[in-house]
Length: 188
Image 1 (tube, rainbow, N blue to C red):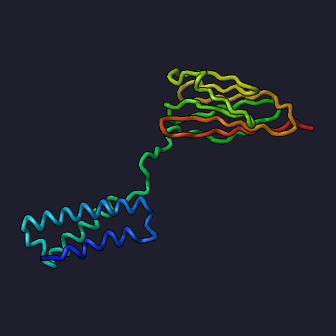
Image 2 (image 1 turned 180 degrees about the vertical axis):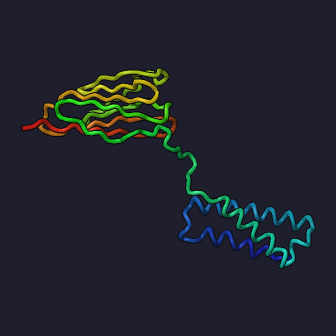
Image 3 (image 1 turned 90 degrees about the vertical axis):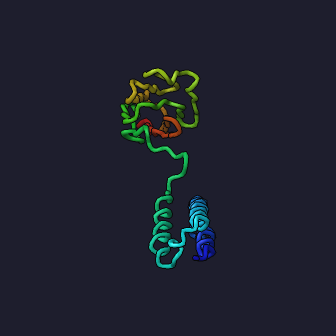
């Protein structure tokens, strides 16, 4: 019979390693528990053949390696991929007024807010995210969702001697993104 104690010492040793991230430590502990359950089952089922040293090296060790490789992942639970896929995230406008059309590959997004310099506008109360298109006019900017794949932004003339910065917040499910628009200062 093989000593399960050798395997019982393996996973806790991996989990105490300083180089292993906490999320991977949990994965190793879950893997360790599954392996011990399998070994305990095999032991109680009196399958003596598997517990010979040569057979164990051929079966259990590769099984453990396969389980270890399949269970590792760097992606955290709850992470969403970019499902908006903006054509650009930064735009520069002229001081005399300008506009830009930004396209998206995703279609289930909506505008959550936008800021002009330090003024933040929460626009969710003003629009219905279920409609395909809507227009929001605030301060010196107009922001439109023209269709499910088009965001249009227009700025009036910048009368200030400093550049104006506007950011537009977009959301699709649990994925958030921003478009930053910089408008040049007026010429002196």
